[in-house]
Amino acid sequence: MLATTARSVALAPRTAAVRVSRRAVAVRASSEPINPSIKKDVDKVVDTVSIKDLDKPKVAYCRCWRSDTFPLCNGAHVKHNAATGDNVGPLLVAKE
Image (cartoon, rainbow, N blue to C red; front, side):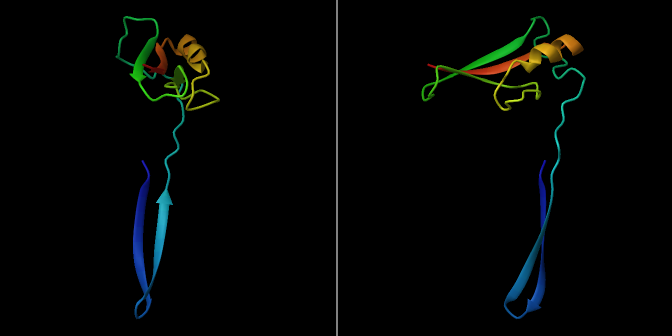
C-alpha cells in the first residue's frame, strides 16, 4: 500500500512549502503457495472473463507474480506450481 503524508511549512505570508514523503511497499513473490484454499480440487485454477471491447481474441494475465512479462502471463506459474504444489494459473480475458 502506498502511504502519502503532507505537511505545510509557513515561509512567508501567503507562501507555503509542502513537504511530501512517500513510502512504497515492494511486493515479492514468496516460495510458498499463493493459493491456499481456492478450487483445490482442480489441477490449475484458470478463470476466464469475457468482454466486448478487446483488441486481441485472448489475453492471459499473471497471477503468480513470477512472470518476466508481468502483468502478462509467460507460463512461469508452471515452475512455481511444481516447486510448491500450488495450482495457481492465469486470468484469461477473452473477446466475446
